[in-house]
Structures are given as C-alpha cells and as structure tokens.
Length: 162
View 1 (cartoon, rainbow, N blue to C red):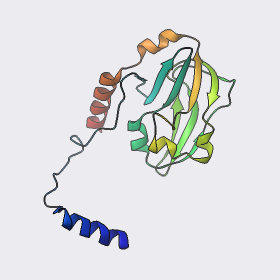
View 2: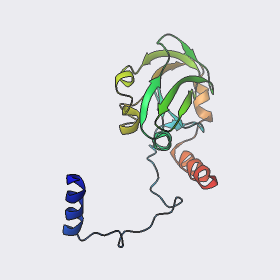
View 3: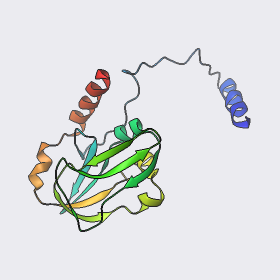
C-alpha cells in the first residue's frame, strides 16, 4: 500500500497520468535486447564464441516470454551436446521449456550459480545467466546461426504471427 501511495505521489509530482502515456500494441512494444557479437538460434538460445570455448544461454526474448524462472536443469561438465538437441530445461511460473544446444561439442563448464539463483536468467541473460560453456566439435556450425539483425527480425515476425 505504501508503495502504491509513493508511486501515485511520484507520478503526480512528475505530472504523469495514464491518460498521457502512449498506448503500445504488441507489435510496437519495446523489443527485448539483442546483442551484437553473439549468434542466435531460432529456438532462442545465444552463443558467444571466444577462442576455443563457446558460452551458451537463452536470449532475453526467451526469458521475457517465459516469465520468472524458478528452476534450471543443466547437464554435468564433461558431457557432450549435439546441435539442435536438448541439454536441459528451464522452469518458470508459466511453463517448462527445453533448452536446445545451438552447436555440438564437449561441455567444459556449467553455471552452478543457476541452481541457487535461477532468476539470473531473467536479470542477466547474457552475462550472469549463461548456462554452459562448450568446446565446439564443429565450429562451422556457428555459421548457420543468426546474427543480431537477423534474430531481431526473426523475433518480430514470430511475435507478429502469434
């Protein structure tokens, strides 16, 4: 209640009202962040390839659609992943979703912080919310993934179709 009163008084002080806010339709809503320098899969995972290691996580767009992440199931270090196959799952207050690997390779590190703090996927999907690090077995698979511009267009088209 105190927060609502504070927000109302702050809005009044700033001369804001719901009548003066622009209306945003789903097609004109603010788009989730997409970072240059990453590669993106159409299943909404991202890859950051640095040297001999590729870091993988889910995109800001994916976490936004999932809602609050409450549990993450990830594989063990030393295992392997194959392109376009599942390696774990993310459970949110809305649904449980499989996580697919955008590339093939050996898992060299798993983000163990996600076990205790799965919400890192929501608050920092491209930094603290990464999921696994992989030594790619076929680096050319990265070439089939989308860049930032292509992924942004893909998401806009996908959202418009729903």
